[in-house]
Amino acid sequence: MPAKNRFAEMHQEITAWRRHLHENPELMYEVHETAAFVVERLKEFGVTDITTGVGQTGVVAVIEGKTNTSGRAIGLRADMDALPIPEASGVDYASKTPGVMHACGHDGHTSMLLGAAKYLAETRNFDGKAVLIFQPAEEGGAGGKAMCDDGLMDRWGIQEVYGLHNMPGLPVGEFAIRPGPLMASSDEFVITVTGKGGHAAAPHDAIDTTLAASQIVVSLHSIVSRNVDPVKRVVLTVGTFETDSTASNVIAHTAKLQGTVRTLDPEYRAQAEDWVRRVAENTAAAFGATAEVEWLPGYPVTINDENGTAHAIEAAQAVSAKVDTETPPIMPSEDFSYMLEERPGAYIFLGNGDTQMCHHPAYVFDDEAIPLGCSWFAELVERRMPAARGCGER
Image (cartoon, rainbow, N blue to C red; front, top):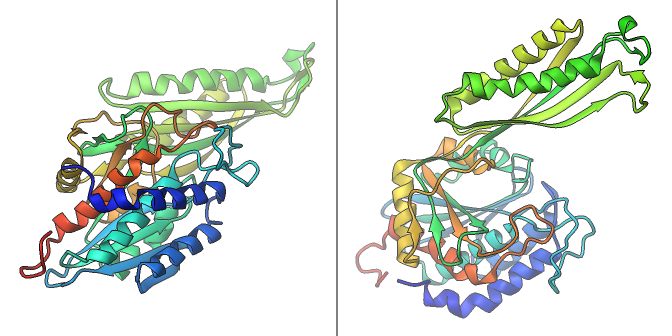
């Protein structure tokens, strides 16, 4: 069964929404105009149960089916924020905001959920409530957590929650998903190494912070090879290294390292902070220096519920003949993980074709994916909450 015919009819309209959002990107929680655009469209569709300011700037809308004998409520989530990246896509609807662009396709996700909302408001051919979640600050701001902390699941009685993300490299029209861990956790660390500054000609009168910090970098990378089961996934990266001196004839007094630890295993995530602290502090001590570690918890592992994955697959197979149900997990992180910690559900990838990867300045969302994404959202609602007998054909 292909994408629903109604979305083929709406394709041009939804594409226009998407391109408007692309031209007017907003960052993090400052998605005021995007949220206003979402609310305006929802009101045009006849949706009256709309709440703004959830998790600061999120929007939650409820569409009731023709009946609600099931008492069920299914949550559908789309992210709204853009990235601080100057656009280099070359499209004629490029960002009008210098240094900001939708380089991850959130404009597409929001537009597809709006398209599903219009269809569901027109048909209401289900028994229960569809709860539409338009989320801010996915890109590093933990907007999903903010909405959950604001009572998202309990306030709207959400029992299951689902989301999707476009996937460059996967052909348009295809879906990919797996049960269990799908995307990694991501925690950050900052290590400040302090020694004793001095002249490069007299290293014996100094404690060489640069040398100590360099050895910490090398030692940190032994954590994975000597503490992690070889068949499990943990990625540790030191991304920056800077000292308090830029002179070639100075031994720096302090050095700062920043990096991330990613894993698909919550157990290893819980141990990672201790590993990093132990290696940094003891390695520094061996050189007579000290190391102070600041640990910055990030997004948890995105773990698809087994039943939720089955429901997501069923909806995808109703839309596309090509659904990869055992796609390999990937190491980027996603704050939909917070929602999946509170309710069962699943996250799925939708093909974006042969485009630049997400977060690239030349990334382009493929509008041909729009009917597929809209249809998947709608199929989830209609299949998880089938219309009560006598309410017409599904």
